[in-house]
Length: 281
Ligand code: PMP
Image (cartoon, rainbow, N blue to C red; front, side, top):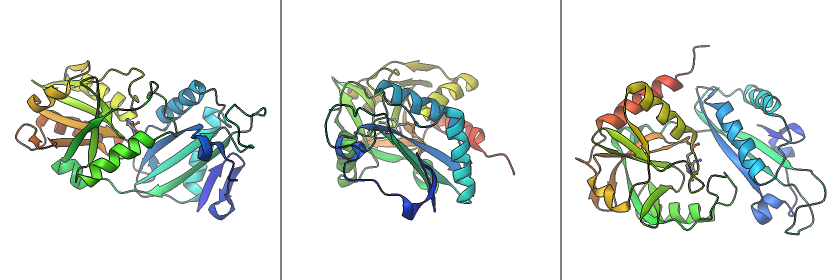
């Protein structure tokens, strides 16, 4: 397989980074995950815009310009002959330098990106999933898609060990987001979600759900909701690049609505399907 790096396209066997890589030692970098359906990137430019925003927020220069990176990612896809459902993983770090917390004197960031097959999660999307609740113990800049994912990893592991699909994070009594997703509550046919503040990652699918709601005439309110309101929700769903729009039908031991995906969620799933259907080639 081919991998895109700061040095250009390389065969994966040729890609190795030293022990003293700042992504490894400090999590000093940012990343993106982009969906591909049938070998077509979905919302690539939105993801790249966010990548440059995340990088700027930690004062990191991305090795290529937006246009050049998009071009090279398309080349990566072509060279690997990707035609199936897949994901692109891309990260940029502050580079490889003798270990020292402060920034290196030289600007020499590392970048790598690779594509991995990943099927649609059809079962979860059709039936809905169970989520657990856990405390949001992250830092104040969750809007940056940084490599520091330890709290997210621990939250997801707790979900897995308790037989759930996702961990819903809460801070001061309100739901912020999922360990790797945004969370939405539906009440009286109105969609609520946490505003895009520093407390959450503004998901690309989240921004699309906002657009779908506008198109479908569904009221969309960016207002945090409390943990206690979950039990009274008509519907709940999560969004992410890998899980698209997935209904949440149970939180801890509480069934949401009648325990089945609701109408608003299904209408948004249909809008998502329509928006992401790759053009025939
Ligand atoms: N919040 C967090 C913490 C995430 O890790 C993700 C997944 N990257 C999301 C939200 C959803 O973002 P997106 O829709 O861009 O995948």
